[in-house]
Length: 453
Ligand code: AMP
Image: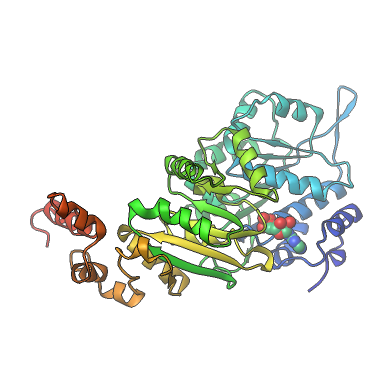
């Protein structure tokens, strides 16, 4: 593979890359940098961790360095914003800004990062001083445009990073408005981990004859991640988490919760058990989020409990364990989550807690990744109540309303501790989660309109 030195990049960029220790472009860089340098539009289907930031940042900085354009306003040479990067979250924007700083450190190029949730005053001050590129989250950028602090009429390169996440977060209307402020004649680059139809449509509207580059499918988790699942009842999850954190040699550990409230509750529970933990999610202030991240990157990191919104796109090295306290709603998100570990060739552990109502999701994950995930059995005191993993093959033959394989087993194996307790107390049996499945399907049957079988 050719080296960065052979790509005819500006010397100051090659020097900065050398200082960063980058010698050989990653596959996405090798594929994307040459067409971008030629001025082509590009769609890159790539996850974070593949080196995609440098794939767009390096050729963009090269263009800014080698095709000078400055205007003279008020007798002073004034910088124009010539490149705009749009990113879904503050953390990702900050991270991209750090990459721009590192790659442009031996040049006079300047950039600003703007995002919401903090005072706009320092951001406006930086913009006034003049920047060549701007990295922004959509909402704050629109505010600043409306107030007249940002002029996008000189944009030469427009970059959408993590486009599918911006779609998920409802930013498309904002992106449409922002795009209208940019000149039609420009280079447009779009990076996305997945390519849902809405993103393809936008790419069709905004990009002109783009080059397409793609890295490993999102359905392929790194081979060096050991994946396992625990079947556990909802009420036992917190204890299981505590036990795992105390009993196994976990290093930097990232725990995923489905909700913000859930993330806070997990942190509280861990604190009670004297386990250092911090939460990171959309309801936290910007400073709390940055603080949690900084602590997590430090040599003695607390357990970081995150929601998907806050965690995607973050480049944190040396994560030894990813724990899915709740399985995500889509199998693709599972692959993103566990991709936080085993980065840069290291190995990692991905552990998931699966309640009976999440077995469908697990099956979807196994189908997407074409691999059966090992069932962990090392904490039987917490997991014996729960069924074994239904296999993909079992899943195919299972239909809603019929007896689920795990339910069949529940009925034939020993009664659970809670059932026994209830019986002793003379209470009727609590409906089990498996029971809830059949109750739900009964409801669905009732709701079915007359005349439909
Ligand atoms: P990204 O996918 O942009 O989040 O990058 C993932 C990680 O790979 C970051 O820590 C980068 O610093 C690192 N990286 C990017 N390009 C290279 C390269 N050519 N050689 C070594 N490391 C790289």
